[in-house]
Amino acid sequence: MRIDGGRFLLTGGASLIGSHLAEQLLAAGAGEVVLFDNYSLGSPEVAASLARDRRVRALRGDILRPDQLHDALDGVDGVFALAAFLTLPLSRDPGLGLDVNVRGMHTVLEACRYRGVKKLVFSSSVAVFGDPDEAGVDERSPLRWHGVQPALALYAASKVIGEGLCRLYGERHGIGWIALRYATVYGERQHHRGVNALHIIESYERIRAGLPPVLPDDGSEAHDYIHVADVARANVMAMASEVSGESFVIATGVDTSLNAIADLLLRLTHSDLRPEYRQDAGKVSTTTRPQLGFSAAKAKRLLGWEAQIGLEDGIARLIAWADAARA
Ligand SMILES: NC(=O)c1ccc[n+]([C@@H]2O[C@H](COP(=O)([O-])OP(=O)(O)OC[C@H]3O[C@@H](n4cnc5c(N)ncnc54)[C@H](O)[C@@H]3O)[C@@H](O)[C@H]2O)c1
Image (tube, rainbow, N blue to C red; front, side, top):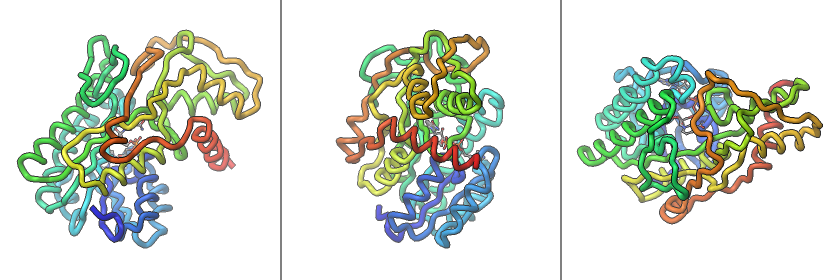
């Protein structure tokens, strides 16, 4: 699908990823970008600042409301389905979170069918693998949910259902779709809702306050941290591509321990603090493994996408944004 001149709607348009995606769509010449969000988690200020571009329409709406979706989708070519409750908000309000992630996703697809939307790009997650115990996780790897915390199990299941709904609507109604399974997303406009990106933003805020970063166990827990601009670019490429009916891992392929994150933050802030190691028994976590081994080879092969922003550069950008936001 052509991005240049195209009309796109982002459910959850005020989200971390949605705000970067909107910017990239505009830069690629999109004719209209509708930010559809009920602001239950995201902020209207983000949508309002994007709406300074006259091609952007910030629309308050709820994906659980078919009437609002039907109105908003008039003339829209492609939909980016981002609205969802991440693991942390889902663990706080599982009833509403599952409603949004599951019933909301069904409502979005049904509205796309009704309105003749050509293609949908679904924000899925590597959570669909649960807590994988094998090296080299790719799109064929199973969901391993034995021993996984309930919050992650519910979030993972909601994304599996989301992808299943995409497949169903693709098969039955011919809607083009791609599911992108992001690893841990971080970057400018970072929020406090992502279990794993929280390690970056909380550690940074503690260092700024003159306090040491606090890490669980021995700090060897690792995640694959992917910058939000790389994730937004994957969305644009997925929409533009002729490929349909496929899921892709969107990751860097690099595992970074919490110790390495803390070291990097301390170095970039010229701090001589040392991390503290402390257990928080009630804390939600997705994995404690030192290695994950996500492979994004399929995204490179079929979409031509690969991560471009290294961790040091990405965290430096996040710090610059956080400092500017505080000033
Ligand atoms: N951030 C990550 O690390 C990460 C990793 C993997 C997958 N994802 C997925 O990517 C997507 C975006 O993530 P994010 O971190 O940018 O999300 P976010 O938490 O910043 O934003 C979610 C948005 O959805 C909106 N929303 C919630 N319920 C809604 C409803 N009923 N109707 C309309 N809007 C509603 C919220 O107000 C918010 O703006 C989500 O689907 C998430 O599951 C994110």
